[in-house]
Length: 115
Length: 116
Image (tube, rainbow over all chains, first blue to last red):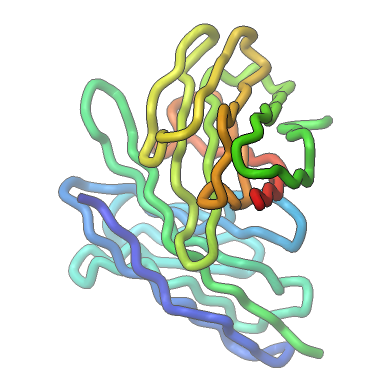
């Protein structure tokens, strides 16, 4: 079956530091890949996505590149801010058949950014 | 613009009690979902619906029932609560099937449920 593995947190960084959150996946088909973000007290929001190999998703200064050869979709940001403190979820979507998609989430990585 | 609204936000139950969680969306979405979020487990799909009057089982459906009598509402029921059902529950909705190429899920802010 499909699975998503994220680096374990929590991750604590100082403001303006470089961020990398690793994500690797296992899938039988050709999945789409997503990063969702959950701010404190809120539901998840889509941060970025990539739908095929070598695609780069980007949003709010975050980037992730779909690497089929390494089955990875690492999230990066050059300079984090306190407002980026949240839990980040990597997810994949695969077509199960008859137009039905299966969305599989990783366990989440908590990021805390300190001033 | 309310989006996805979940009620209640917090609830404490005793083992064996029943309750219903309500999810309402105002975006005219066809698809609705119930997830549970547990520490170190990520999100797991409980049940979902592809339209009014339909429901389907997800990854962890046991102990839960759902109903989608109106397009905008998706109810999650616990008939006899157990401590293993202590979790944070999220409702989500989408116009097309969640996970499809050009689609994203819209999430509610969650319901924290404790079963003693």
